[in-house]
Length: 396
Image (cartoon, rainbow, N blue to C red; front, side, top):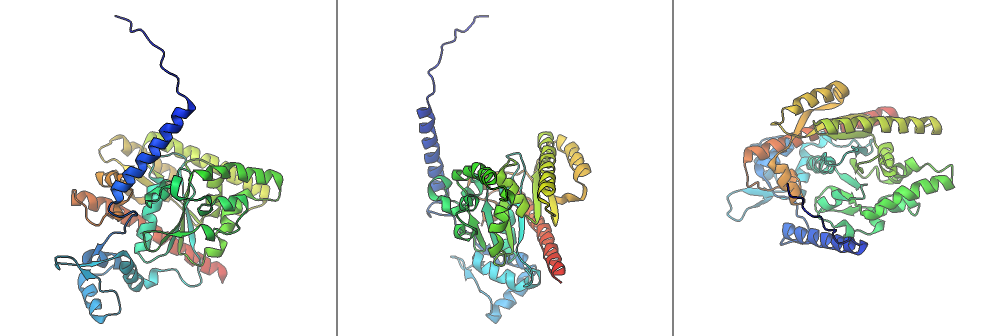
């Protein structure tokens, strides 16, 4: 066997990495420009009469009759005049009317949900986004907080975190103590009913600022910064969803301590299952120490484990699914998010299944993915409504 002579390659300088980073940012911008053409930003989908009826939990006949009364938006006929269409704002008005009994009671405040997992690539960010979109379609008002310096959630909104987000638009001013409320960081989005607190790489600074403040002031409670920052806006939203970093960081701890409920996406794979075990062990140890040292009382209204990215053709997933069920019991939601070409294609276009007005592929595949997310949001909404009921009972 002939031995191939090895020649030393040229060394890679830091300047080369800087150039590479600049090219990567430029490429992402080019891709976004192509995906969002001809508009510079994302556009909300358009809904058919059938879709509107489904969201309102009624039939097309009832919708058609209500249109004749003139008290709700009538939509508009499409270009060919063959069907009636509704924009997102109109759909939300209809949903609020038909689902008024399902909305936040006047005596209740926003329910905060943290979406977390120590492992990346488990659909954490997508889960946060589709939960917000699905709940907003049901008439709720949402605030999404991107607490991950990688800013994937911000990117899903069609916003480039490196170039379009200033530090004051993130939770950084809260962590530094420059702001006491998250309000100045809130911005509207392309999706009616969803506001956003964005993220950018500057959010990494929180991992140094928070422990530094704790060392300087022993009375400072680093874990309570985000919770306190949400206090004055809890009456303005129905649900607040926090997308956390894939690690037990200072920001993640803040998100969990501010949350009324946790949602943990978990693909049925051996590695992801092992990672989830580490997730719970580390968090329980830390939370126990905080509770004991600070005399805290921390409870969650619900913890939901969501089976995500489920590949039906993978025989090994059945085994891991049984492990997950045996471990987490009733915390496992009775619905699975399938790994499909629909979710892959939508994420490649900075979107989710809810961003699609018309799917060009197999409609059965699309319906399977959309139905799964709809079912998840049904269950999440039930958990939220139970939390509202608890708030009201505790206030009596």
